[in-house]
Length: 330
Image (cartoon, helix red, strand yellow):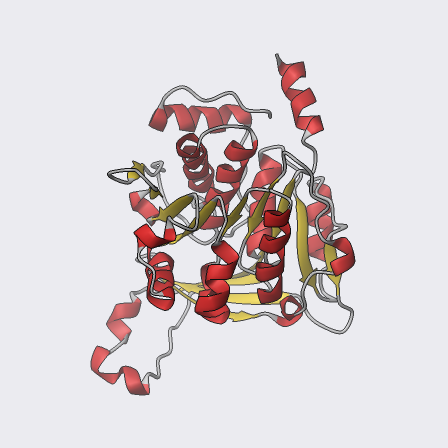
């Protein structure tokens, strides 16, 4: 049975196409609550300073984080992104995990994107992001070479890529997950609708989904006329799946962990588990459960690419929450 699964995995080698950002994260911890330092009646003259007690630089970015987790799940996605002259250390780490780098565009005159993330004691986050090299789209000569059976994830990254790649996937009948995330305001209503129309799933946290509805003027029901699934992540409350024709949404419980060290990157880990399941032929609900398990390992570590798991530890955590572990190529 193991040899059969390995053969299936080999046949599907590099058949997950992943676009988004590659970035360095400067993660900072604020030992208080943001709400105690913000006066709602003075938002028009907001001027606040949060004294942090910890800062670390980590590898990150949506594409990098999802790829890292997929590598833990024994997948080798092809990353489509642009980076700068300071990318060598990151490149060595990706290569060390067996991830291909041929779809990554390198710009000698720019820096790799960088995120400045401050988290308070309640898990709330304030992020400043410098796109730098991410302002340049992927090299057209190295766009994904898609084939039947492939899957794709369009994560927050270069805006042009977030428009062009969905068109490529639709034209070839490749199912894709559309995850506009932090790029919702930059995309705007028209480009958002263009990007997610025809997607197998549109995914975001509850704030992002509400913002998408507000910007586009589309209700969640109307969104489901354009996508196969609507997935809303809810942090410690799990996630919610919606599909056209369902009377009620389906809730996916979060996986409990002894302690949460840092929520940064949990959403990207969820997306990795989700696409792993879908790519392996599992249904959306089971795939979302895999996403929740993957996410639970991420939040136990400080940083987005610091955790790890084995097939055994992953299966044990899945079974403790949801029941028997589904068969997966690993």
